[in-house]
Amino acid sequence: MRRPVVVRHRVESPHWRGAPLSAVVFSDLHVVAPWSSLSAVARAVARINALGPDIVLVPGDFIADPKLPGRRADPDEIVTQLERLDAPLGVFATLGNHDWADCRVAAESGYRRNSVREALAGSRIRHLENDAARIERDGGDFWLAGVDSIIGEGSLNRTRPKHDLDAALAPVPGDADVVLMAHEPDLWVEERPQAALTVSGHTHGGQIAFGRWRPLTPSRYGSAYAHGRFQRDGRHLVVSGGFGYTAVPIRIGVPPELTWIDLSREET
Image (cartoon, rainbow, N blue to C red; front, side, top):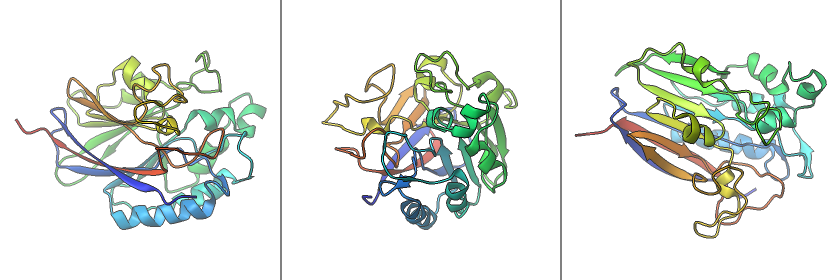
């Protein structure tokens, strides 16, 4: 696997009042050897630790696309590698559409169980399943919310989504600083979450990009929100290019990525 690049975004928002926050987004692992193997994940974990962010966010798609040939890793093995992540404010995760659609345990249980969810439950990584956590720190507490996949059980027309944005934000006071994890960036477009920053993955930046042309982007909005930083009314979306592969083990113009975000108050 190619060595991932570190893509950096500086986000200044009038909806953020606390001290600056640094986060690394480690999205779309799709762990399958030799393309994005456990050893490649281990090297990425070591690199993230060396970068030294305040917090690490893992917004889903641990499981590999079944179209990719290779040796798949068990979710317990993936989570064991991720437990080596070391950030002072913690490591948090949500599930992605492949974690539902390609999970054998989920299919066999009528989607009542999930192998990634169960692996995370026994780990140091906090899984935010339509829920929020208050993050206490010097310089001002904030809330981190996480929503499940809007695609959910593999239905591309979204008849069986797993997300509930209202439930995710229900514990959050109205005047709080908020960061949101949402696997698919379409949620930011459609449901307008009241967060200073939303972080997403899912698109792989189109995985193949020729300039702004990203014809394979899996979104209702084509390549409009495929990769990078977007803002609306001072509320920002950062879409990671992701780490692994979907369908074919090829990336053109969008290398594997670790996404660094510096979030701070907008100076007026």
